Length: 134
Image 1 (spheres, one colour):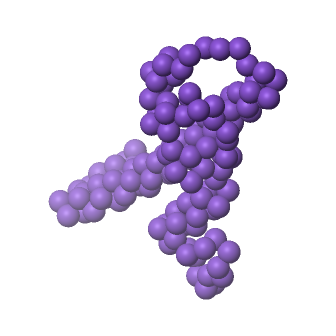
Image 2 (tube, helix red, strand yellow):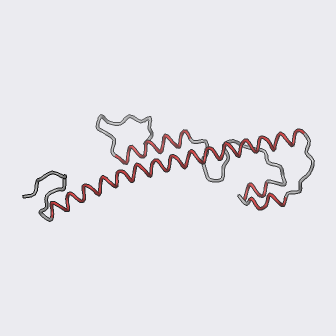
Image 3 (cartoon, rainbow, N blue to C red):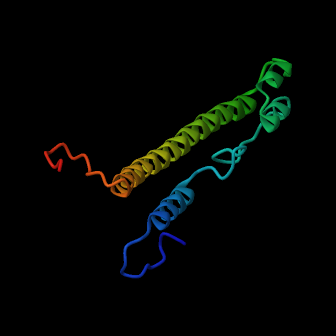
């Protein structure tokens, strides 16, 4: 279900709310996979294997050399793109953490309800802190 779809006047279920929230996050996300960058970046050929395989140890295999201004611009743009990608990954992680926190809160509520049912099943009064003991 898209967040833009009209829903009947009834309230959204918890699952529908989560689906809508995730759909909204996905629409706004700058990343579409674990191995993508926020934008298409040019990569110097000697760094390409390290970036494509996500193996930073391969960066040291590149031979340091003098660069002209155009090559330096490519490196600077690459660093900027990596910083933006890192920021997008942090945002993604924060959203996952928020969704997980929401789920944990709902689970806590479910546990309280289950406890109330258990008390009822065992003919015990709920513990509200007041003097309801019979």
